Length: 308
Image: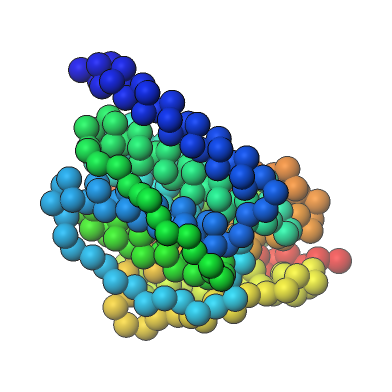
């Protein structure tokens, strides 16, 4: 019984909690990308234990991105792993969950990334307990000289490998749900700026493929960055994520996440520091065409916003 397993794991849970508290105290003075990278390595080991339990051997290799990514982008990638863990829970008869959202920040530091890794590790350990998955990850060697992009790339590979664990690529419905979160942020900015919203959704292209939705996501990012430049915010070059071949919905999911990360800076500039992006609401049966249409609609809304 689950209760028996929990009782048997009691001492282990106490030890884990003590270890985490000790790590938190040790990291209180300073957290570096290298510290976060070690935690990402630990996540990779934990996911591998789950993969072995279900005899999943397929990997989805993804080329490392070389870009000047920031802590907010790493945070968003970790958020995407939590979304995929929620999908995994649903597939295995457990209740799904909405990942935690944070207040928008202009200059977040590595502590937000370290915190996200701990949420991921906690969720994996809960899953392992509930589904009776054996094995413990670690230890992980100390890392040196890591940058935010290194952490991002490590988490990105884990995120793509989770598609194999889930038995399918990220579904269009999950991608659409995150695009809806963008829509909520844009609507909040429209209201804050007093912008008259007369945007009209573009026509739906029934034959749209993930590549078309990715183009739409980059179109949206172009408008996000137009606003950033108007507000004096330095933009990030996301060209490393452009693809024209072998595009999958995970690529669109990634760029939607990057748009969400950038919108947080804009919200702060408009005095919306305490405006949380709402959690995703999953709606079944969505398609790449609907994702593409929604992204186009959001792009039209952003074009209306003209900071004074």
